[in-house]
Length: 577
Image 1 (cartoon, rainbow, N blue to C red):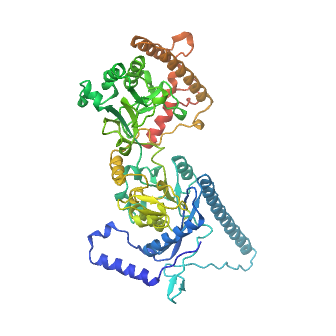
Image 2 (cartoon, one colour):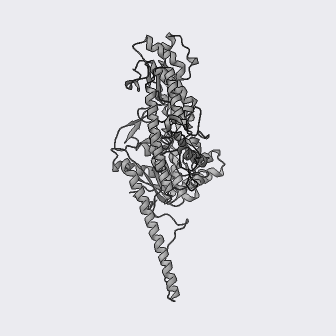
Image 3 (cartoon, one colour):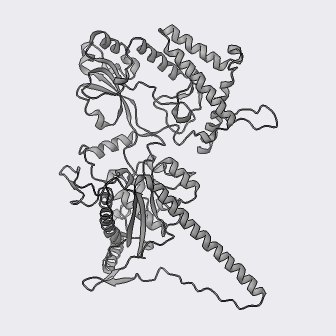
C-alpha cells in the first residue's frame, strides 16, 4: 500500500527536541512517549485486525495514510493496515503465520544443506565459493526521495514477506491457541521499560489478563468489562406497605414485599427478571445445570481455592433453592414473558443485569440494590487484545505503536472511528456522530476504549461511568478455568452423562414439590442417593461422588487413577498458584 512520507528534517527536529527536554530535567518526561534509540531506522509495521460491515478499501487506505502521518513523526514508522471481515480474519492470520514459518523452515533447511555440501566439498579438496550476504547496520541512512517541492522525504520500505507485527486476538481460545503455536512475543521487558506507561493507563486486572504461563503475551484493550446484578425495588409500593429500604440487601429481604404486591397490586408483576442463582459454577460442559459445583458468596474473588462439591452440601445453594421454591409456591416466579423487562413494565421487584447506563432509566422510580459487582471472566475480559508476533520486524517498535494506541487519543480515534469530518463528527459534548458507513470498526478491537471519543448513542459521561464500573471489577474465582469435551476420557464422559441424568431427575422432582417440607424431603432424599454407597439398591452406590474427588484412586495397582472434574480443577489451581 502507498505510504506517506515524512521529512528527515522534521524527524531530526523531534529528536533534538526530545534530547533538549531531557537535558532540561522536565519532570513529565517519564509520562510521555519519546523516540528511543531503536526508532532511528525508518520501517513499516503491519497491523492486522477486523473491519466491520460496509468498510471500503478506499476508507482503509485513507485511515492507513492518516495513521502513518502520526507514527512517522512519532516513531519514524509507517503503518500498513491488513483488515478482514470477522469470519475471514483468523484463517487469514494463521495462513500468514504458517506461510512465514514455512519460508523460515525452508531457508533453514537450505542453509543446512549448503553447510553439509560445503563439508563434503572440503573433504574432496574442492574450492568453496562463499555466498555473499549484505547486512544493514543501525547507522545506515534512511532511503529518501524528493517530494513535489524538491525536498528530501523518507521512503518507507514495504512490509517484508516474512514479516507480521501487531495483530488482534479476539478471545481466550484464540489466545491459548496462538500461545501453543509459539507465535506470541513476550512483552514483559517492554512493559518494564519503554512501554511501562501502559500500566498507568490500564486497569491492573486487565493488564494481568494478558499473561499466559507466567509471561505477558498480549495487551487487552481496556473497555467496560462485565455487568452488575441489580435488584430494583419499587419506591412507591415499598413506602405504601411501610418497608424500610435500609434493611434490604438480598432477595430474601423482600420476599414478604413480593407477597404484598402479589396480593394487593393486581396491575403489577410481583417479581420480574432473571432469578437464577448468582455466582454459581456447575463445573459442566457449556454451563449445564447439575447438582455438582459451587455457589459462592458474592465477595469471593480469584486467588482462593473453591473446589467443586455436592451442591447439597452448599449452604448458599440450599438457601437459594428454598427461597426460590417459596417464591414459586406463592405463584411469583416470573413467567417467560417477564424474565426480561423495560422501564415501562410495572413491577414490585426486578432482577437486572447491566451497567450504570442501563440503571439510569429506573433510578427515579426504583431503589437499586447491588447484588453482585462486575466479574471478569474468560468470556468478557478477552474481547479484543493486541499481540506482537515472533515474526515482527521490531518488537520494541511494535510495542511503541501499541502503547500509543493505549495512551494517546489521536491515533486511537483514527483507528476506531476513521477520519473526522469524513467518517464521523464530534459534538460539543464529545459524543461521536457517525456520518459514513464506509469505515466501520468495533471500538473494542482497536485499542484502549477509554482514550477514544464517546461512541454514538452513549451519554457524554460514558467513559467516566465505565471507569467507575471497572474500579469495582473483580476476577471470577474460576477465571481461565475451562471445561471442554476433549478433557474427558471415555470413563469420565460416561460418569458425566450419569450425573446429567441424576441432576435432571432431581430438578424434575423439585419442580413437583408444593410446600417447604416437600422441598426438604426432596433435597435430603437425593443427597442420600448421591452420598450413600448402599442407597437405592445400588443404582448409584455413591459412585457419583467420584466426580468431585480431587485425588481419585485407581481401582487396580497397575492402572492410572481416573480423571475427575475435581482433579482437573485441583491441577489447574495448583498450576495457577
